[in-house]
Length: 249
Length: 248
Image (cartoon, rainbow over the protein chains, first blue to last red):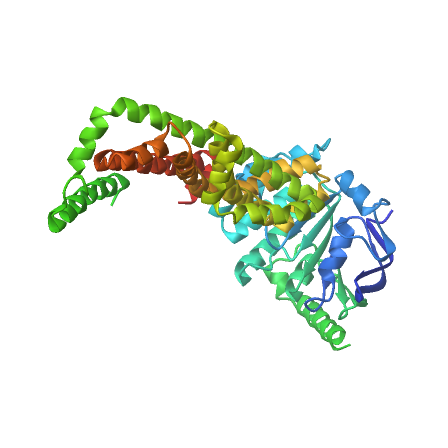
């Protein structure tokens, strides 16, 4: 059973069509990035997968269920660009809050998870006391702690500086390699997409359709050396060209 | 400069300015009694002043309690029942903009010599800032946080307890700084019109008797009560939203 199966999914707001009917299948354990120009409908597609919005036509199945049913089964973890943390709760309490609400049968230990994320010193700090990068790690811990089958990432590193962004992308790749989660990442960064993904889906201008698909055949560990390799740079070039073609349509 | 030094400096400045105005204007005690005379009145008439202070404070606190109750219930109702919000908005706007002094006299005529009109005046003055701030707090919730809770299939109650209410709390506490202080002033205004007790009544009585010293003594007590109300609301802020303190 595929992790995500979108069949002829479209989305319109009033008269404006955001997503033209498209089909998309994501395998279990696959990391897929959605890339496209600003406002092309990437986040809308992610929101449809999360059950935050209803498609105008077509259907989406998450592990064979509707997105709402997948949410009810706590199969979805969501992390957005702006960390969705409760300001009155510490980092640890924020992660624990996911478990309080989801009450999953199996879950990771929040404190252990945060330590694994390199936040030993930050467990009892409030969100405003954390740096942007630390907040985002707590945010991703909140999305992962109940062990969802599908992780949805909406430009999680979009608001961070280049170096922090690169470090966090490395860190996330490591985390997901261990967790074996299916993940969909919305990003504007071609390098980030190539670093993290098994497959990159390039979306056209609004209304979004799938303009191109870039298969990323690189070793799982994409460290600094891999990112300097010709194959990596070739994929970055190929994705960037696809992105330009899609934007020109 | 720490807050204690600032307070001491303030009290000394008030006394110096007070004596200074009397000296420059060569004002008679009946026009502007000196601070020591006011202190003497407070010491001499402390029993009557205390009794009337308790009466005013009681009116203010009861009115403030109901103002809070109404504001919280309305804000939560408006959050979930948009039709009720549309229905109630004209009422809220009219009540907010009522000329409260003239309405107070109408309430006294309607309800007679009872605590009811005085409590109603306190409610009318205090409930709007509380309601407005609570609604702002509910409306300005981070949509990403609500999305996160939706993907976790959180119940409406969980969303309220863990997201909406904590977000509204700083706004609610901020409203206390204005509304709680206003409750004292509102109770005094209400007592102006028809009352046989309370600090407002003492003010009217002192004016009728040309007792400038008692008038000033009563005003000093009202000012102290209002300042205390402000300090209580600041203390509430540190208790109810401790993470704000951590930010300082």
